[in-house]
Image 1 (cartoon, rainbow, N blue to C red):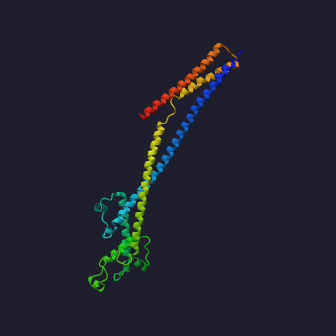
Image 2: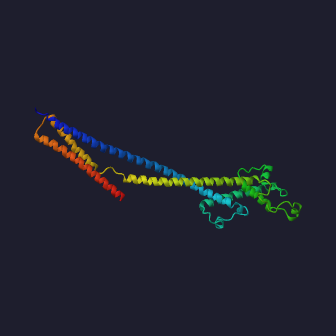
Image 3: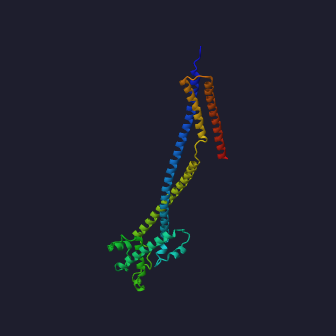
Length: 316
């Protein structure tokens, strides 16, 4: 009984197909996985950089607002000293008089000029309506405004009240008149009445409100800066991972080995199709198959060695 000569060639072809499918599928899956990982890292880096740019913009705006609030806090803190001055001192004198605040000079200059302008407007307003001020009676500023139906909506109520009492003190009565009205004080204090005037209440409310805004701004600024610090660390980490990213080494050699092994599929199929059976053909097909199989194992061993060496160099 003569054996079927096709079994050897078909077996070698099927085995070669299986090996090529397994190794090729593994390489393809690895490449797809690494490509997806690189794309994910790139998207994460883009999102982090966008968020970081937005937070830096917000931090810049908040810091500018914080510096302005610090100047407002400084001006509020020295308000009692400033109201004793007939004229506001120069900014350089003010800075020397109150050291240690560490304020932005440009913002301080701008706000100080605004304060001086508002004080001048308040003083001019009081001077314009000075004929309505009765020095013989002690009338609170808010009551005086209501009695004379004055429009003070475009003025700072605190500065108007300050200038009102300053005017009364400057135009105080003569000693003879003081004897007839001994209850009139020489210097009128802001809190002289049993119940605080509306301007004083407004002033306290305004200070408390500005303190709350300052604390809230300081807290938000601290939170944003902390988040910026974390994001910058994440961006640096993602960027370094992308720069260090690489596909498996010797990939071209792996594809070349698979191509060589694919010859073990083509030759047997060609022999079967042409029925070119011979001893030399059999040896050729067997030699191609085992040499391709050996090449696969050599490639795998060399690949493992290369990856281990890279890992040891990275950790070392």
